[in-house]
Image (cartoon, rainbow, N blue to C red; front, side, top):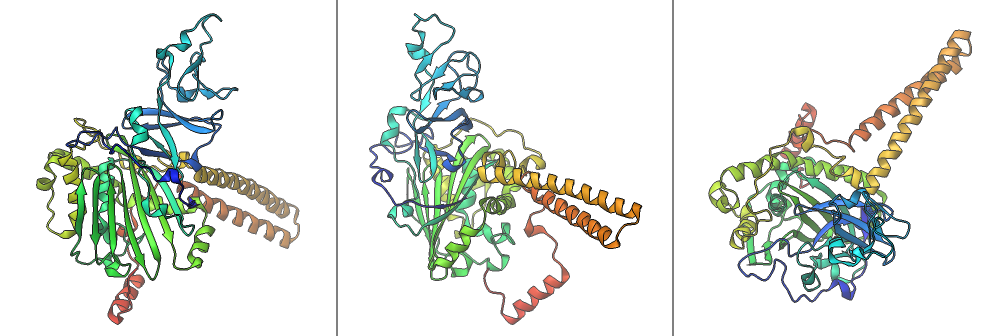
Length: 487
């Protein structure tokens, strides 16, 4: 997903009177904060959408009477069935699938079809659906799961550098439901030193690995922390990296270099349930020249998402098991004893765990992780991304239609080739028909491989792929001649 970022507006600069996390200075309550749950571009106003936030099932729907998105608890107050299985009625209200109770955007029950015309049961509070505060900011739908009266007083966690009003920002976006906790995700993305190894041959290169020195936490409190890595990644070629963690679920790295301009790596870790979160990854760029911006716009969103899913899968399997090993050793409270952190490279990871332990900031206190999932489930792309992404869904349907056309075309070409051969027709005609069969078959197989990438990821990550002897010799030659620069 590639978006132009609109200039800042006064509404994007909140003046909060309450901190995120509630009023207790010694504890951070994950309920009392705003979370993104969908990119607005992926929401269809004619359909109901589902999401689970902090273990609470939600239904998302477009209130055309108020022209805004609404988020309700996904339970009808009548008999507790999921409202997400219902529909948007002809008058624009949310209608329960079981008995047709209908609800306005504020949750007020509008009608109960089973009661007499003189009845007024719909007017009592017990007839209301639970409406959660919701707001759209920076292309994301945010929801507040805590006390509704607190929501207007708590700041929506936004990407602060993009509030500068500049029209030069361009942003690549993706998302995925991940089979591990939001804290595990944050720990992973705060750790820049893993990139050369884990993501070798995708977005990293082992040749760029180097000792990490002088990484420092500049400020830390209940609302998060800020840090700096003076040298920065890729052996200093990208400039100094500053890192921000905005409690409880937002972080970004900020880099400025002469080569690339300013680049951000932004991650929202929205907690779904224990052992599962949705990542919203955003990559805002403010390029030094207009040419990279032009080429970014040429790449289709679905193609970008395939590559980004591959990057997420580089560490998806081992993170799923890592958090279970940590739980067996006492969890976050015992993190410093369970894990050996002898270098500055782990400074931001340690700061995150210190925040969790200092402010009792476990999003699911007292809960245990579910049993480990099989590898095939960990590599699923369809249910964790494709079905929720408008670009990938559309591309998948187009590919499937093209495969069907090629299959039919191949059958027709084969029939023509066979007929020409039987009647002793032109050799040229038969040859062209055979070529048609081969081209249709090749296209069908190629599109089949592409189609599969919308359903599942690769089991062997690129870092573990065997190297060809010729490629190894070429890399060795470059190292010897000093031409193996940073990648």
